[in-house]
Image 1 (cartoon, rainbow, N blue to C red):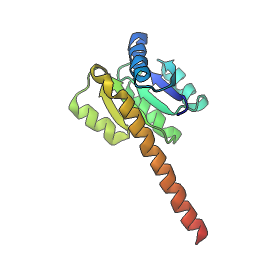
Image 2 (tube, one colour):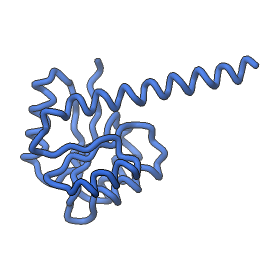
Image 3 (cartoon, rainbow, N blue to C red):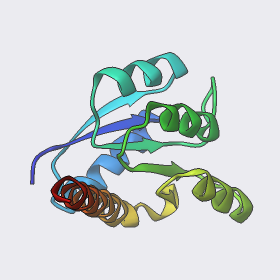
Image 4 (cartoon, rainbow, N blue to C red):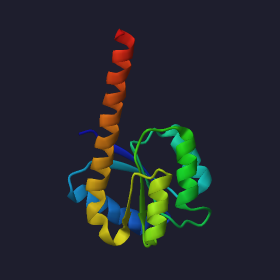
Length: 140
């Protein structure tokens, strides 16, 4: 598997480092682009072509709900996963309904590799399904 380009919206270098260790222990090769401001995030979405977006909920300038809206406006078809310290069950349901692919608590990062791989597989299957439907339409 190729190295995953992960855009990580996180204001704690130690939290990002821990997430990186979890991914490395799972055998996932990755490169983080760690950003913590709205401007850096918007710029990275446009220029980096990430494979996955990980987002903390509470940041100094904005939060994961705003980050998800910005992400959705790009039209990118990649996973957006909320990785946060604590959120209420209601908020978790809300952000999933708004379009996040998954959420996990920083206290349970052991799920991170599976969350990323499952979300990537979901998008791969959706792309293949869309290509298949397009080929049927083209052939008819």
